[in-house]
Length: 278
Length: 343
Image 1: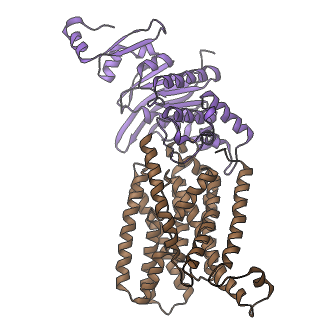
Image 2: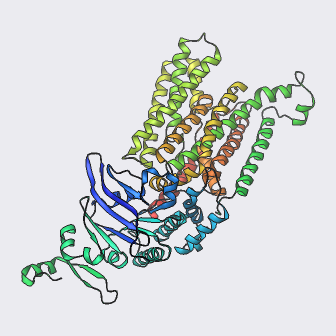
């Protein structure tokens, strides 16, 4: 893979507000094919809104979001859906759709107004289900599945869109650690093998360090800093953005940054003169 | 449920079309005076009284039941997709109530002012009022339940229940102000009836219903996406705002048409789509046309039951559908609740 990759999705000086409240200001960030960009930041820092802008669901008030160099607004809805897929935090499905039916909905932007799925669409959906490990559930009703299974179904639906960019809004918020790791392993595999560009919102700083190529740390609607996990996940940055003390070092096994929160007792001990440790 | 194929689509809808034709023919022969189809067709009018009964009384009524049932069935399916909730139906959301209230108001006021006017003109005025009522209620419901660009399904259901009670009270108020004859027609609106209508009315309602239903069926794929989340649908290429408005408009169009000729017939839009979903799956490309046809079959049978069970007098058809629908709604509510709290 060449080191000089053109960004596939870019936010150029993007600002956005809900009513009078500015939620994002002067955001500049981009992601290239084969790259995983992690969005970090406290609750309410504007991460989800940024993902909405990147998917074209919301339009920036100032600046623009481009895909392959062209403003998202110049693409048709179906064109965008073929290029960019989103996995939300949670999807509530009340009607009795089967797993296969939901995954096939990812083929929707490729169908005509009243078209039926072709054998090719079916093959793409099957492949997506195999990737996310839900192929054996294909005929089950989605609302009868567990949260983890349902999330992998939605991930399969996103993959069935055959996108070039995958946006994940805290996709593993409600999953246990096994399923969290499975989702991110898959994400990494897809970005390496198929050149998928991934933007993921994460709450878990350790998972971010483990899986992301680059991180952007948001604070109050602005990008506080961005760069490699080692550059971003420092004691000072985390203290400034999350307003909390953490212990940071390198993991012997993975060679990645690891972050541990500290309890009140430990923090008190630190304040009593031991000084900060990096 | 296996995914939808063209073959399955044709098979299900073909079966339902055949079922509907059979239902219409069969139910037209059932009644206080049983008719023999062979005999009916063997001799021609006017000597043949059976032929007259069939063509003048039974057939228009059966056809009207089919049109109204179809309209209510498909509207229920579409509203359930829109609100991602199997409990939605035009009756429960108060759309039928709003249409009936305006229709009755028009009946009372126009009726007293313009008794001299030609019948057809009066009927269309009342129908227009019912349309306006359906659309007005829908807009009101929509505005109430829309918070920050998101539809809150349970807020909508609750608003519907309250609005229904409110409409009911206003209708009772009107009822207590008018004379006996008008009071009788108000009762007709409240309980729902498919009694004697001429072919012109049936034809008019059929045209309205087919326009609304045709548009909805064309949106099947998009309604699939919408039914599992607004933002997800948007990201999959659906213009959610336009689809929502269009669906509400088509729904009020269909309900307005149905209510203006048959009054408030409840629960068809609840029972039909739900039962069909169990049989054929939730895909709206198939569910919408199937609910149209299935609703038609259901209401023709319900009306046949209504006019034969205590023959020679008859029950209001709304009583029959409500007797099926009330318990059914409670069953659905329990099932949905359990699922919501389990996950």
